[in-house]
Length: 82
Length: 447
Image (cartoon, rainbow over all chains, first blue to last red; front, side):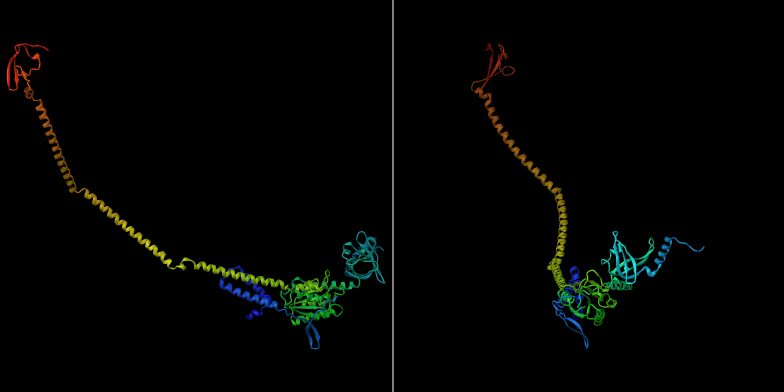
């Protein structure tokens, strides 16, 4: 499973769609189908998990004496203008 | 004087026109000046004079070209015009044929823009083949714009609304003024150095051509072209394109549109995931139930339920064959037996003993019959004899004579029954019971 943790969401979703398409064709042997199903469910959980990481950071780069660093950023709410 | 060539006016004007038209400087010139004596003819052509404080030149701008003007030329408007110098032969006057014209001020920017655009285009910086595809699911979106104002707010709001799982890294830059271009270039380069972003949005909200100018500067355009990270340009201007727009991997009309291009909609992905998950489950369920059904069908096949049936089938067949064999044999024996007994019978029938017995019986029967019929005959004869004797007895003449009757005979001993047999005198003999009387006929009397 370690390699699954490292694959990107994009790869996981792509692979999931591949698995689904394969399984939906229905011509795979049962054992392979079960393996595909398990893989598909793992991928699906992986994707869902990645989607649940809502703690995305919003940061702004600022110049300091130590160089450029990132600090949390919140845009001003109602400022008008460009 | 002999070799002096004399030209007609037309000839000399034609010659001047030819010389001027051949001049490479005069064929494409930019002029700065102020419009005067402006006439917009009913034909659509514009006639005016361009002048500065020292000099003036007659100008024409034909309808096909002045239709593209983005401003309305007026008396006194300072303009920057591009065109060619040529000669109007009829009047012997050279004039400026304007192809393009901008109000001055902006005009110089416009000129720089056009020249830089041509140069970069020639370098192939705007080629479609250079455009890179954006990542479908960026983890971090880099935003290079002013940290204040609507643009950055629109971008962040849109990114968060659509795809709240993406990190946002803002590189604050100046988006107008002298320092704008260097700060934008620095930010693009820095983003490429730290390699944290999957896609960059570079831009600002809408503004005038001068306000947007930083995005037309060569350094900015080249920085965008050099970026390893795909870049979405988002200079808020619906109609005019900045050079950044041309060089970016994709151009968005507004910062909001740029954010929409940068990330997918989480709901769409979730729906897609859900669909895939459902399909996955449905497929495997179908597969399993289908396989189970298949297995069940197989398990219900007669040979699995009752393996003896395979043997039975053969046993039945053997029994049948045995029976057939037996009955066949029996039939054959019976048939032979039948034939034999038929022959026996036939033989018996033709045996002499039988015949002898038959004939013996016949003889015996005939004997018996003979005896019976003889007895019958004897008895019958005996009766007849008695009856006849009685009858004879009854008929005996002696008996009658005893009652007084007599028999009359003639001499020849013939019984006389009629008178005709006698005559008178005939001697007769009369027989009575106890003797004979001789008589003579005395008379005959007929009665």
